[in-house]
Length: 356
Image (cartoon, rainbow, N blue to C red; front, side, top):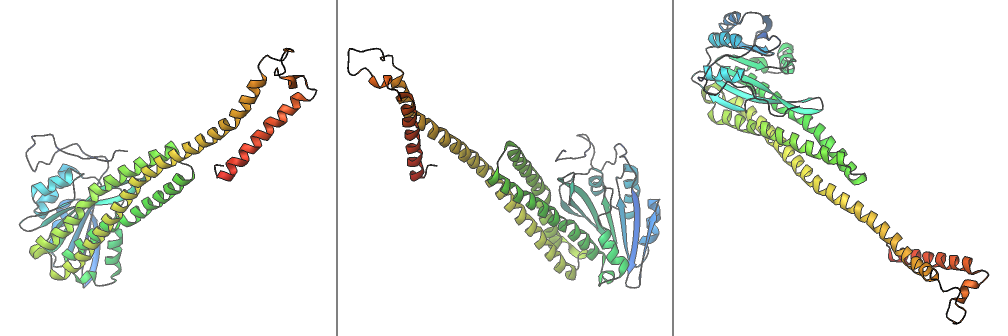
């Protein structure tokens, strides 16, 4: 699976161009209108129908789920009067998280971390905030903002009585908080790898460590800028962000810091795991070499003794030094017992020294 996926126009294309091949699948448009006096939601087929909801005095949330093409974005841009550069960033997915301020609306790009095929990936979330409306885009197959919609549908809390800026905060907070369960799963994988490193390190373990390092580097690249997005909304939100919403945005900013702290901790742990792996392999090699050295040391005196008695001086009867024990009746078993005694004495010596 590729880590970095970016959709872009060919170099030299004029800014704000909405063109490109139609993506597979079709996008759905769901319009949610709410206020203190009620809640309603409706799925529309034509983007032009969104205009009649914008005329209402309540908050209008239009969510586009699925891959969008240039024609659909162009019609939505005309209805919501969006800047062409911002709409182009929606079409060219894979953007770095950022916040852009225009005359009468804000545009934010966020990265939604999800686990796909046991590998973390990020999906682009595009948000427009204007006077009384929110327009959101998500290219995936499932709507990630259903928990927010359930809160609005159930009428629990004071969310219906707040402005569109609070809805953008809720969507951003959900996007940021998706990083916690994903990092928790990565943390469990790191703990399993640590146990495997201490128990039985193998080449597959090293490959898994390098895979984790790439995944964490990718997540850091895509999630780190979200802290600046929230900070920019606190600092440069102007009249579209009310003071009471800034309190909640500060809490969301704190969540981004916690996620980055976890990411940095996991990166340090995986970096240290490579050293642990090399140390474990080196220690295991040392253990093998120690066993082999002990075996070789035991056989050195045994080889010396058998080498002496392997010399051909058995038939020399003229010298008293010509190995007379070669003619003993129990000479062969006696030498075997001597060899066994030497081996046992060496093993006992190694045991007392703590080398075994």
